Structure formats: structure tokens, C-alpha cells
Image 1 (cartoon, one colour):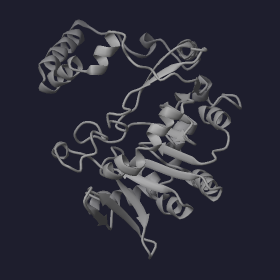
Image 2: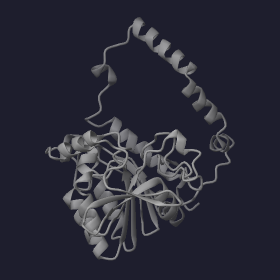
Image 3: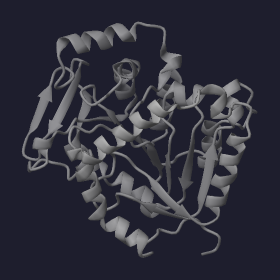
Image 4: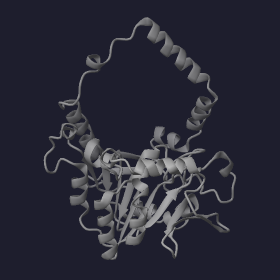
Length: 333
């Protein structure tokens, strides 16, 4: 295999591409992940649990056992176990028949010293990614559930578009976002992103009744009432990143994140090619009308519905998002 690492891209071909996206990897990258775990384990920010938590008494243990017994009898738990038992992927994994896509993989991660503000110049994942990717030439396709670009991010995308790079972004709509405060940090940049030339999509919140609908995107949003969780992007149809990094200030400056940069045209193209059809059916396309006002276009497969405000949300929630946007909390989002 030439020392290359092999990621199994869960979701290629089955439509469940954006609810969440995980990578199963074999090869030299596994040792690099193990060493990075040890680096965090031995860092100054890691403390033994018994320093922070008191010991459990018999009453606590009995309560936990009762909770476990209750969960085992829960209807949703039984459905989950049944789905696992019927999983073709799990069968292939246990039988060692999983088909891997072989490609070079580079692991990138934040220095654990970031938690104390002591990381070196190249200690941040975002800096490592920028060096590894170089300058995009054709396309940047980004998926992030919590997307807060800030003025620097908007300027970056504007420069890419000015250089002829097609930028497409998928994030959660307000109806699908489970953190309205974060949505407020994103919403105020929509107009600037669109004026810069970015194609912007917001994932709809799919419910159980959508499963049998002809307009259903084939599981693209995962289970009923699901929202977006995948954190990934592709560049120039050549490289794909999958990891924990959101395109927001919290991931860039506060959290410690990691991920895989996979140099695979096959996998990068799988992400990019989903946008023209699958994403269009699963998300609202956000556009500006002739007057420069925001509009949300919902494609059903047979017609296009235009929404004049955030779809499937009430005036109170929209007002709350607006009020949140006035708060000086963006660095924490």
C-alpha cells in the first residue's frame, strides 16, 4: 500500500452524507492518532478524574444500574440495537470485508497547550490545514453545523471568489440549529457572503413524515428531525478534511480539535458532487433578490418555493436571534 492510510468514507453512495460523517482509518495514521492521544493525556490540562469527582456510593451505583435497565427496555434503544444487527457495514467490518479507499492521510490537531494559550506558532489545527492545503484553485466545498465566519472569513471567501474559486457552503438552517445563539453569529454574515459570490445552503429539518416523501433526499439528514453534524470540506476535487473542526471562533481559538486531511480525488469528488442534487433537495438555498433582500428557496423536485424569512420559524425565535446578534459574544461562539 506504499505506506498510505485507508479511510472508509461512511456514507458514499448511500445518501446519508451530511447528518454526520466519520472516518474509519487503518495504516500509519493510527499510530499518529495514538501518539496524539498520549500527548493530550500527559498535558498540563489533563487531570485525574478522582481530583475532580467524588467517589460513587452504593446508592449512586444502584441508580445507574436502574437507568441502564430502563434504557435497555426503551423502544428507541431496541430499534437502535436492531438497526446495528441488520447493518451491512457492521457485518462487513466483523467479517473483515470492508472495502477501503486507499489514500495518503495527514492527521492535524491542536496542541493541547492551546487550552492554556501557550501553543506555538504552528500549534493550531487551522494553521496546519492552511499550510497543507496551499491555495485553492477551483473549488472549496464546506460543510459546518456551526458556521460563524467573522469578517476575516468573509474576506477570505471574497478573495477566493475573486480569484475564480467556486465556494459552496452548507450549514444548519434556523429550524435545524440546536443553538440559536450560534445561528445569530452566522446570520449577520449571510448577506456579505452572498454578495461575495458564495453559494449558501441551509439544511432543512427533516421529520418522520419526510421519509416516504418523493422529495426526500434519501437520508441526507439522517434520522427524523435531524440536523447537520458533519464537519468537512473538500478542495479542488483533490483533498477532503473530516474532523471535529467547525468554521467558527470557538473551534479556531478555544476548543482543541483534530481531523484527517485525506488526499483522495474519489472522496473529495463524492462530497462536491452531492451539492447539485442531494443538497439542493435537502436544504434551502439562500439568495438575494433584486432588492438585495434575503430569500430562502426550497426545491421539492417538482417546484421551487420561495420563503421571505427563515422557514418554519416563528417571529419570537427570529426576534431572539436578532437580539442575540447584538450581543458582543462572537469570540465565544
